Length: 164
Image (cartoon, rainbow, N blue to C red; front, side, top):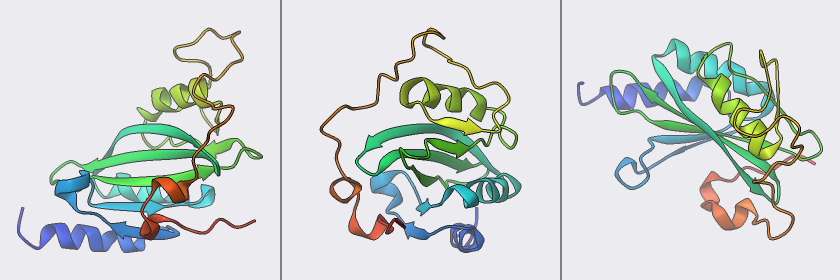
């Protein structure tokens, strides 16, 4: 990897459809950048990452005051270019686009988020519980009270105003 390659790859991130892009201290956070996306931009951003040589590491969720925060971690096959996409799923919507048709491994991650947070992944090829019994109808990582706001969890530079 040449010294300018990381900067070139990160510059390519400017073309991704995101509401915000925040460069990170890689040694401190393990990520080069964090991008906030909305539901309509998720699949185009993920498709561009796939085409750019990235692979999906994981998808996880966090129950916060604003909804379910979905975190998608990607890394690059040939260089240390780990990045995160963040998507807020409002409780009133409770759905996000599936990326399983782009990264087949997302199938398991999306099913796990469905199990634990109840997020419906639209377009998923077989959204059913992965770890919990099918008749449970409980999502154990949803909080009943004490949800923290993103404003208390994330640095100010990584926050994007939500539209009403």
